[in-house]
Image 1 (tube, rainbow, N blue to C red):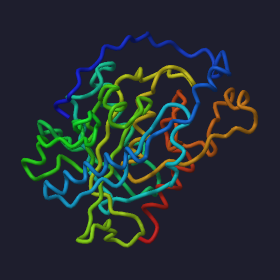
Image 2 (cartoon, helix red, strand yellow):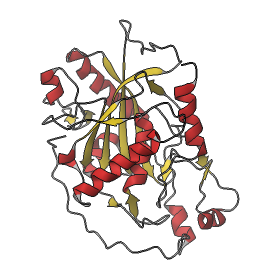
Image 3 (cartoon, rainbow, N blue to C red):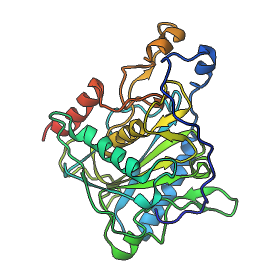
Amino acid sequence: MKKSLYALLPLALGACAAPDAIAPAAPSAAVARLAPVTLDTARLGRLADGMNRSLVASGRSLRVAQMSFFTLGRGVPSYRRLRFGAWVDRTPEVVFDASDYTTQIAPEEVDAAMERAYASWNRVARGGIVVRRAADDMPNPDLFDVPVYDDEGTCVSLFDDGATPLQTGSLAGDIVVGGWLPAQFFSECLGNSSVIGLTLTLVATDGTGAYVDGDGDGYADIQYAEQYYNDSFQWVTAYAQFLGPDADLESILVHENGHAIGLDHFGRLNLQPPIEVLLKRGNLFDPAAVMNEGYAGGENRTPLPTDVAAVRTLYNSGR
C-alpha cells in the first residue's frame, strides 16, 4: 500500500515495563474485555462481492474466497474451520511493503519481527511449506487497501484500481503484507474496529465460477493473499501482558501468517474451571493454539501442537 484515503491518527504510547504478574488485578474487568466480537457476515459478503466484481472487470480469474479476522478478546466464533485452502507451490513468496509499516516501532524491528513470524511456520518439522521473502520493488503493490463507497456512504469494496499489478499484469508476490491502516478502515469497511489483523485469501476459479482444486486434495488452491493490520492498537515488541493493553507484534503476525498458508481458527473459549482460575493460568482457549480465534494479550509466538498438526495434515496428506 503506497497510498491510503486516511491520514494516520496520532497515538499516545506508554513506555514498556516488565510485567509484574500474569493475572490481572481485576478479573471481573478482564472478563468484560472478553465479550464475543460481532461481525456482520452479510455486510462482509457484499464487500467480497464488490471486490470480486472488480477482479472480473480487470480480467483476472482470481476471487476473494476468505476474509480472516483476528480480533481482541473472544474472537469471531463462526470462523472455526481449522483449514480452508492450500498452496500448490509449497514455496510461496511474500513481499513486505515497508513503506507502510507502523510508525510506533522502528522499521528494522518490524522487519525482523515479520521475518521471524514466517520463520516460525517454516521451522515446523514436516510442515511441508516454506514461505520465502521477495523484494519489495513495486510502488503500489496492494490490490485491496482503498475503500470504495456507494452513494449512501457504505463501504462496498476495497479494490484499488490504481494498484501497480493492474498496470503491469504481474502480482508483486504470492503474499503481500500491505502494512498498517487506521481504525477507520476496519470500522467503516469491516464493521468493527476490534479487528487487529486481516488476511484476504484469493483462489482461482474455472469457467463455471467454481474454485479450482488442481491437485485434488479437497482444498481450494490458494493463488494470492494480502494482509493488513490495525494501527490504532498499541503495538509492542516485548513485555505485552496477558489481558493487558498492548498488542504483541510477533504474536499477531504469526497468527495472520497461519491464515496466509491456509489455516483457519480453532479452539474455543474455555469457561471451565471458573474464569478467575483460567485467567491466573493464562489458559483461555481449549486447545491453546496460535490460531485461537481471539487475542487476549501476552505473547504466543510459536505454533503449538494443534497448529503443528493442522499444517502437517494440510501439506502432507495425499501429496
